[in-house]
Length: 334
Image (cartoon, rainbow, N blue to C red; front, top):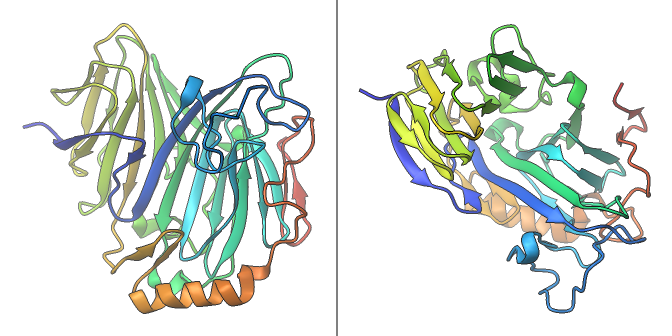
């Protein structure tokens, strides 16, 4: 009997299971950038502010000049942003800022409320500016929904990779053997050992095989998102991209790439919170009354206001990555 319990086709937004709320894979082949860090392209025919069609292989999203997501609020959950190619410029209502990418991960606890902007600066003036990232929303336990906002940076060099014969596993969260990534923020469900939360990116080269080890918790939810490639054999079930496969957490899952091209898989795993979820747009709480309170609080306080001179700030024309935290501390990749 196969460990694959269910398969589902993937659209732009991928279906998730508790404790995950949202997952999306952005891949945009942006053209050369201009002096404002936007695309050298005619934007007149694009529905700026709501450009999600992927015309010419890229999107402006909510950006008007620079692609990305200008200032917007969150409360009650976390965002995990894993950037494989390109750069993201972060700015928030705490006055914190970051430029990260090229394998880096940002883990942001929105908690009681934060505004942030996520812009995609196009720094190469002479060639393409490919951007590829995953954004994953992780629910917060009810007891932690109103904690202070906080973000952590996992620089590329600190994110472990497990490399076998033709297989590479990037361990964003949750240990794999002796590979242990940096710790999630302290209020995160992922910071608790019993949560069994894991985020792994698996690449199988043609003809390679690997066995996904069983989770320690029998009640963990585990989904394999096959997002690139074709012909991966998951314990006897052939799966082509783009497909999600829910698998039995108690089973070791042998996987083999039967095709002549690489296969890429994102795994999300975690024990469920099993708490009521009330969600409206950028707010995720436990009751409708708490959602209304979130709207009231945001209208009253703007979650700390917006200390930037524009709603889509970018951080200069060089490619240096950095993180400036709300307490003024600055760190950079080694």
